[in-house]
Image (cartoon, rainbow, N blue to C red; front, side, top):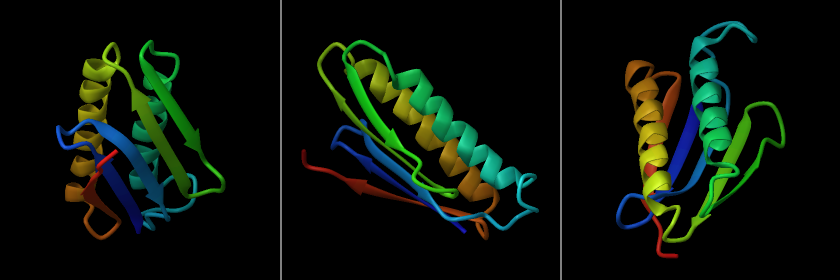
Length: 111
């Protein structure tokens, strides 16, 4: 099971997204659930990195682990909000379609 945790500001802006575990839907290297989560997470990182007004840190310390954290200023807030909403909606869709293989939880942050 891939477990995803999304931490959002009070207004819904993405601050942290962590994905860990293995879906177990298909064979290693051909698992469509794992591929979907990986593509969404990697695309979010590449879309946000280098964007003016947004700082993004990420790590994939081992197979089946990926996290990203964001900071932003006024210039980057709207873009981060939209990109984070895209990521969270995509991950939620995967979790809804494959509930035995992927779950997502949401937390609010206060930083």
